[in-house]
Length: 106
Image (cartoon, rainbow, N blue to C red; front, top):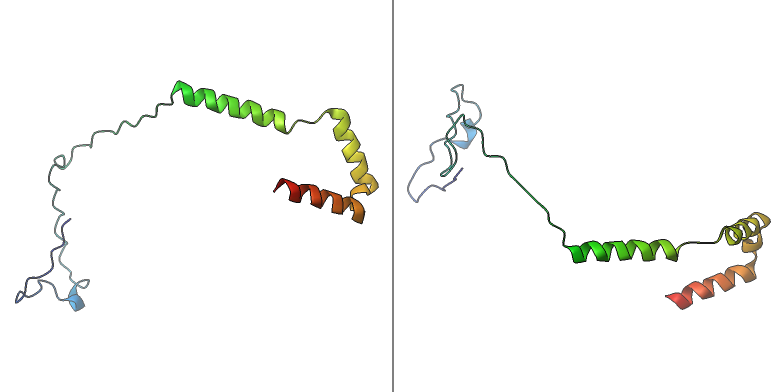
């Protein structure tokens, strides 16, 4: 749809105060240039994504590294859970040591 402002000295065809109160049916919209004729279905769009072999290998390497980084031995995990339930990590000296380690990594 193209909207063109009125030229100097040209009156508007529809006054703003009466624009929405007309009982006459609205005119049919005009087809855009290059558009298919009315009543015909538009051609379906065919989008495609291609991922290179290099991107796939980088993704696989990233997943493998991520899985290894967070793995804990079951015995170590059990020890940590036991310490948590005993309140070991609630002690001020332990909290201070943990905060220092985190700050050093930043």
